[in-house]
Image (tube, rainbow, N blue to C red; front, top):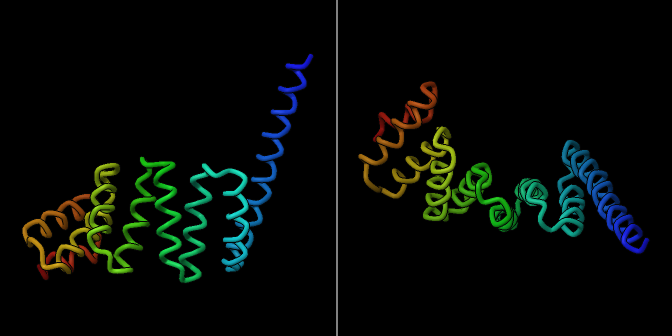
Length: 167
């Protein structure tokens, strides 16, 4: 009997946590659609407090933080998200974009390289890597090779095509 009561209490606690999480996600989504990013960030922080291993909450909060102009906070959330889910290329890609924006070029290159390792079909990861190599005056042959990979995946990538002829 004691086991059954304990099991029931555990299931109730987990269900309560899940339903509360679902309600909070709905609120955060609603705030996000209304461009109320601070409110969405606060609600997502509540989700993280309830479920600290919820990688999606970190990703979503990173987007809200970036929308609020807190790029370093967004990078921090993406770093935590990557610790939880290291095989998701989207996390590295977005963090690479934010690193690029904050002129942390080596970190951006490392993230774009990781994206290419996880998802070698991501044309933009090759494009941004090539763009960074050109910006840093690195090897132009490598820059062209990265642009070729980008254009092989997405032949209509106009930015990559323009950069290819400039290198």
